[in-house]
Structure formats: structure tokens, C-alpha cells
Image 1: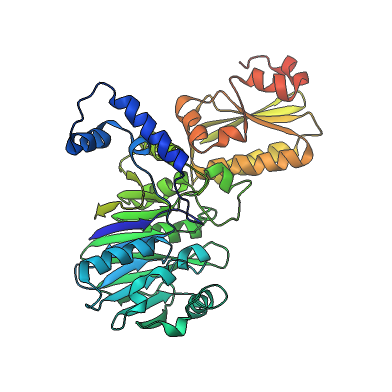
Image 2: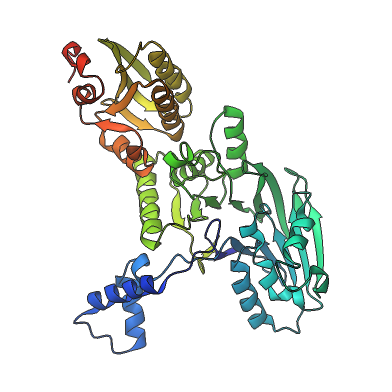
Length: 319
Length: 125
């Protein structure tokens, strides 16, 4: 199983400014002083090996979109944030417009940042493609149609040429999708959201974004831990600090790195991926949160290690 | 986890010993709120002496936050003191160090929160 992150930012896309790019270049030039970097290979190796991630790269800025490779011709995608546009570019480059594909889309919820990529997901305009959109909200189809018409968008939903189907799932009932056993579960978020446990051949990925895990009440904790149990990868909404989720941003519907790690430790999950980054944060701030989470895992580990990653647009993880 | 409670003038010191995690956070929260309920009026305070606290989970930190909100609503003081290295790091990583008053010693805490209690601190650092 391979997981590709096409959009990792929370709430709204956040682009890297010209000033931020210049800052990165300036730091790289200072670090490179006196080096022999006469070839692109040498320069690239220097960037990858000797600059920190926020100095030499970026966590990126597209909103939520994650692909779980099926191993077959079909696609399985979690959410249709703005990262879906780049996914579409890569898919069409790979297959060409004349080779119809089937895209299965699991929707955490219907807030704008999770559906905004759909009008720019070019397979929807190509006859022969099949798009199946799954979710637990009864307003699933309504939300997609509402953003895809005047005055918000110049092309009406009825003009799309792909076959588009909406499938309302029942929470906590496993369903076979693209060769995976997919189980949605209710999460705490304004208007509700749903996490997905995606399983096949003894491997499990949990996609849990836009969820405020309060760990308040034994029954709820046990329910969530069971959902995460022994997962190989947990993609987790770590948008705010723990203090913020309990004070100024309480009931805003998001979680923290601290709670993500605790849940993975309790559930003996193997790999925590910090996801849905706060759009206010720059690359250095997100990297600091990543490093702090690595440290927190070190000082709180008992008998079960948890690997930590911070998602960025373009990250690929083998599960 | 055990919590030692000591009256200091009109204020209270709570000293948790061991780990505050999912299983112990609820009794810790109950003791925190009970200690606050026993305070008469400002500038009385509850100081959590963390000298023998080995670990605090998010549930334990939630208990501290709930107590801090309660204290603020009544104009009372609440702070933590003598954080040991692991708990100090947890406070920093969770950003609780930005919202909960933290002091090097219990004496420092009362010096700021309830100076009148300092003379009652015999035997406490």
C-alpha cells in the first residue's frame, strides 16, 4: 500500500510567498558558500542532505487530498481539497485523456476546503471516466452541485461529462471499495465529520482529519482507540496546539499533535502523520511542531515506538 | 498517583506524585476543583507542586485547564511549580507554558499569586 499526499493544509490553501522563497534561497546561498556545486546533481544533493526541510523545501499549501494506491487501475482518494488538481494533472499525464479511469473518493465532510478541488479535477470533464463519491452526509451530492454552478463557478455540474455517482455510507459499517475494506466513523466537528479506516491484506491506514478528539470520557476514548488499533499509518488532524484546543480554539473541531501521539500510543499504531496544518504557520513553525512531536514520542515512549512524520504536498509513504 | 494536599494560609498546595494519565486524570481534576472550592476569595490560589510528577497526559492537562478557567472566573490564582524536565517539556510542547503560570518553586508561585501565604510556607521550598 502506498499513500501520496497531494494536499496537506487545513482550512484554506496557503501559498509560499515570493519573500519566503527569497529567504530560502538566501539561506541556501549562505550555506553553500565555498562549496563546489558546479552541477545540478551536486546542488540537489547539497539541498537534500545539508539543508533542513523548511530551508530547502516547503510543507506546501494545498488543502486536503490524499491518495491510497490501489495496486490496480482504480484510484482511491480521501477528500477533494485543492490538492486534487495536481493529482488530476499527474493522473492524466500517466494515462492520457483517452484512457478512462475510475476514481473512488472518500469524503471526511463537506466543508469548502475539502471539496474545492473538484471543479479543477479534470477527469470530471472527460467522457468515460467514472467518479464515485462516498460519504456519510446526506447532503453529499447537494454540496458538490452547489459549488459547481453560477454564480460560484462558470460550468454547471450538469455539464460534466464523466459518470458521477454519490454513495451515502453508514457509519461503522465496513464497505468494499476499490479492493479495500473501508469503515467510516463519526468524528467531532461542526456539522460532523467522518474518519476512515482503510484496510487490505493485513495493512490499515486511518484517515482522520477535521476531528476534535477531546479524550473526554472513557467510552469515547475506547471507541477511537479501537478505530486506530494497530494501524500502520494514521493521518491525523494536528492543526492546533493542545492548549489552544482547550482554550481559545475549543470546539473549533480540530486536534493537536499531543493528542494524535497519545491515541497512536494507546492504539499501538505504528506511524503518525501530522496533517491539516494551520494555514497561519510557515514552514519553520510546522517543522518545529514536527520536531517537538518526535521529542514527545521519545520522552513518553513506554514499550511501543511510534514513527512521526509531518505531511507535505508530494510526500509518498510506503505502508 | 497520589495527591498530597496542604493548606498554606488562605491558599492550597496540591502535590501530585507519579503519573497523571487517562486513569488518574479524573480524580486529579476532582481534587483540583475541590481545592478551588475551598478557597474563600482573591488573592487565594492553588499551586500545583510538580516536584514529584513524572508525567502528565492531555487528560491531566485538561484538568489543569478546567481548573484554570474556574479560578479565573472567581478571580483566584492557579499556577504550577517545580516542573521536572519531562513534564516541563510536555508543558512546552503542548503550549501550556503559554497559558498556565509556571514558577521555579512553590515559594516563587505564592510570592506572585498570594504573597500573604508565603509566611505559612514552613517546610516547603
